[in-house]
Image (cartoon, rainbow, N blue to C red; front, top):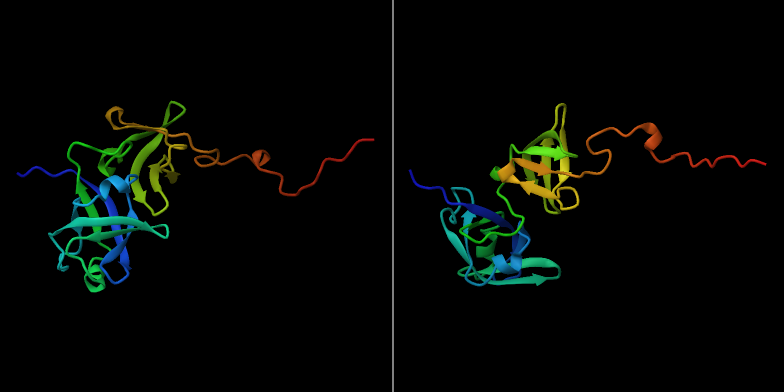
Length: 192
């Protein structure tokens, strides 16, 4: 049985940009300037019916244009070719060097989720959204979405089998009515 290659998903091609083969890129990496250097090679995730199935792409150039990540690939020199790649997901071999604070989903799913030294649930899955990733935590009675940001998830320790979270009040529990801000705006009566 062949060994499975470790790969990291680093981007998705959103749409053709201009006439010279450029593609707008949705990033799934915190280090695009390191991942998308000239000569970097990516495995493509595309439907089997795609002419790109089983092929790789090599970066020719990476730029940020008007706040958007844009990438040029070798052999993709016109808009028509670029359009044939829209919605492709880019994967990179994860040999040796890895991004700091980067994990594969399979390393996290099933880990205990700990708050104040108490296990409050298990990680069910990771949702990858454009703004940020979300951890979907299964508690005893429901699923809770936790933004996967340092402020709420300060410690991820797959070796110890746990993720430590510090969510804001109300994310995992109902807040008592007296803790809610005063909606009526009534000021206390002044005494004479």
